[in-house]
Image 1: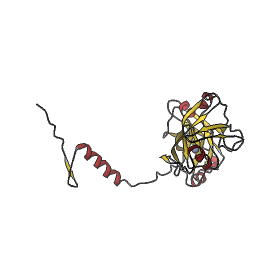
Image 2: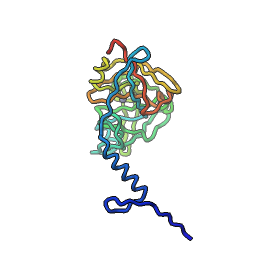
Image 3: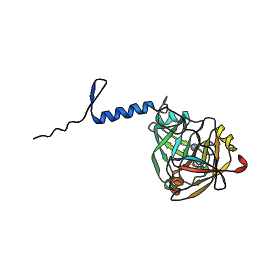
Image 4: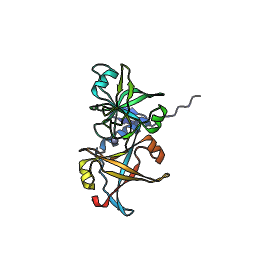
Amino acid sequence: METVINQPSLKVNGANLSVERISQEVMRRLAALQPVEEPAEPAAVARNGHLELDVPIGISVRHVHLCPEHVEILFGKGHDLTVFNELYQKGYYAAREQVMVVGRKRCIEKVRVLGPTRPYSQVELSQTDALVIGMKLPVATDGADPACQPITLVGPEGAVTLTGNGNGGAFVARRHIHLSDKTAAELGVKHGDLLDLRIDGPRPTTLHGILVRVKAGWRTEVHLDTDEGNAVGIRTGQMGALIVPRNGV
Ligand SMILES: [Zn+2]
């Protein structure tokens, strides 16, 4: 004999719903009640004998930035980058588009393109990636650095070679923090300053030389690469303590 288990049901707008649908409906209504609010930027506090600001850390996986001309060469005439998912920084996104990065010994397939487009193209790899593909890369802030190395990108519709020498190329990204102009002023730091970041946890570490980058509207966020994240045992979303010089506040 077959046993029939009666699922409790509830009428919502005249329709009988299962427990699963009821909980989905409750979650949907609760979400609709939550006001969408920007999280408040935390304030610096005196701790351990200096001022510290707790900051979220984002781990940047290898990626590519492209100029509009290179988007068309790699993905076809008239092609625009399309959004795969939004990044923590407003207005920036991981694109659906991916390219193959061609090194001297090996290639890395499916390297994500980040949008929007930029005036020139650049490839940001970890030191481990660089070793795997047989390249020696400098630590740099952007593709305008003359030390950036030539590298070739292959897309579904074509290939481009970035020439280095300040015209876009491959590099290992310098650890940095994004700050709004307002937060930078409050902390008394400026674009180009180098700060320390203390990371607590199973592999306690202080990273030096965190480059301050300032732009109106930016949310406070440290960017490290995958080698750095793995070395200090953290993942995206975890916090670090930015150490702010006392004379700055
Ligand atoms: Zn960044």
